Image (tube, rainbow, N blue to C red; front, side, top):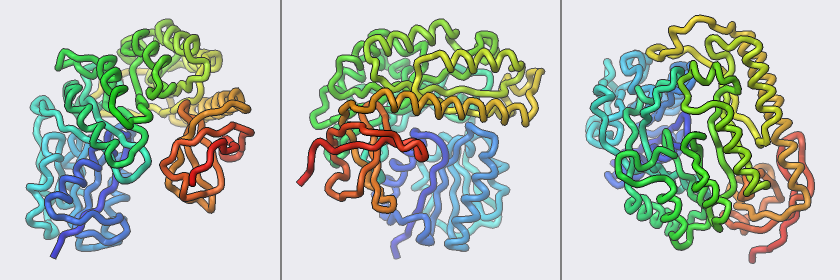
Length: 435
């Protein structure tokens, strides 16, 4: 009888790309992929380690999987599995934990899927994780997350990712172009380039991210290329100028900042100060006034005094950006920041987070309002939400219209007409019809 497998992914776009690739691997090995609620024989949970509640989330997903099938074989993979394998092994119902070096070999461990009294743990030293595993997501969305890079050499003081994923390493341009061509052949219109430190692409291959973008521009049928995230010190004028003149690299940058205080940036061991960050934003807006710019920021980092937070708030308030991703600092064992004095109490962290979330809403609303009356191409998503469907413009404005199955996975010009402030979504008029 054919074994069934279901997946659950926590965390980033990179995790989604890897889950999808593992799913194709197991399907090719003869297993049948089924929805999470279907009571699968095997559940694979791909975990994240960025926030401090990874343990709680992992336990909840395992419990939910066993609710659908109490006899299911549960395998935990991903960053949290590499960092805390023995803790995960103690979660009731977990049968196997695979670290960074083993998750792509999961097929070899599923011959026997009987429940285990004691979970099997397969994890090695992260220094020994040197191989690069190509991955991309497909089949779940109208866009694909294409992994181009893995690992990180930066060792920022607050981050566990280098401990979970190892050294920075990349695929080569030739292979990535082949993968992009495969993705486009499946009818996908947009590829999102993803990695741990995407702009570090080519650090081990004598290639670079600019060259990769130039090569992907030439992939026939690839209508949109989106950069998921890029460090400000790796975002060169050359890259910005390329995006500004490109027909298919979209005007949207997500640029991690983390703090608007140079004192805190230095403590975090970031590789830039606010002056460089400001210059990147100004360069983008000079060439692409309509460009969307997203920002990662952390509140409550050790030693972040009230004045430092106000510096961050004021800096972001004055910066010409479009939205924020706000993270509340959480203590992570084995990081430099864990040992630092000046811990910020949790209520203060929550207050600072709330202030920046409100600022983000204001920034997004202002950005959306700037574009009322303008025309942009929208890629429409497949989801039908109470007879409403959504899509994104090239510069990442979320829009909605009445659900029409003919629009799914189509890129249609629309005029932005108004903003629904309740949902922070733009209303639009369709300027093209699909028959």
